[in-house]
Length: 171
Figure: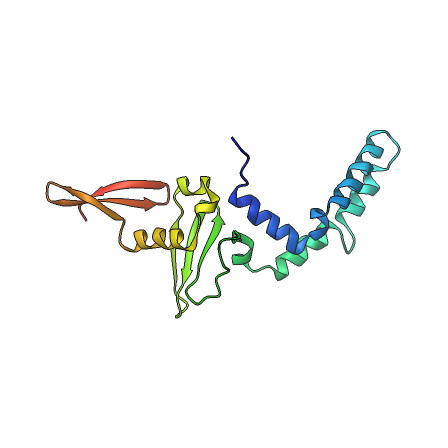
């Protein structure tokens, strides 16, 4: 099959592009490779190279410190897919990547947030992650799942939990 970038890849690329654009530049990568080759041949000083890489105004250490100060936590987790508009806090739906996987957030006009975990199967097709699909995930969470039918007079619901989908019989 074809290679498909993960949601985490989108988040990391956005962060690097915004706060560490140097590391996303192909010229930087080519120069770094040449410097590492020089060090491998014994022609370069590895400690000096590491100092330059980590220290100084353009060093990794200062860029990470800048990101810690300037980067909003939501922006650090947001998956900016082309088909998803950025949530302005006025009813838009957004997709985030957290420690337990991707999740959907919708902020209403009052500033209240609704959240729901994204079902694992939806992550396989990134083009299917549209505002309508993400709103459906939130709707299922709000309605305590989707009623599939009844069993012995009780509703059978398909629910989404932290660890994936499950069936619930009754309330």
